[in-house]
Length: 135
Image (cartoon, rainbow, N blue to C red):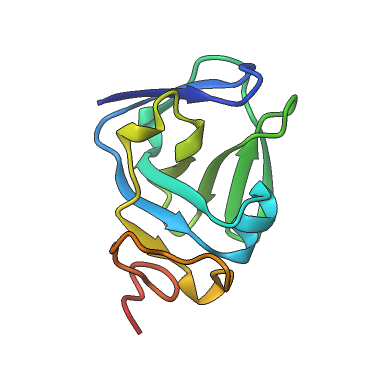
């Protein structure tokens, strides 16, 4: 699968090859705050499958083991990388040219979900990470 996307202004562009995995709608407070949204949809690809085809994004550490990237011109949220999983990177689903290609398969960090955000999609919900399971 060849996925293409970029930021709002078009300065930062990317291509991701291969099959996406871990498609989720994250409700954690960090994602919400950084994107200015009630939740953020992400999907993962192998880190070596992501190639920047336009301007490179700006990166910053949002915590000791997490690096995020965004467009330096328009501020669009683009990626999330956790050092605990060095071979994968998460891409903001809404940054895809066609976000319908990778719909969320579950909800993560629902313990942080905003009370007014009601889910009616029937997807699995995890209090924290998928790996932590349903507590």
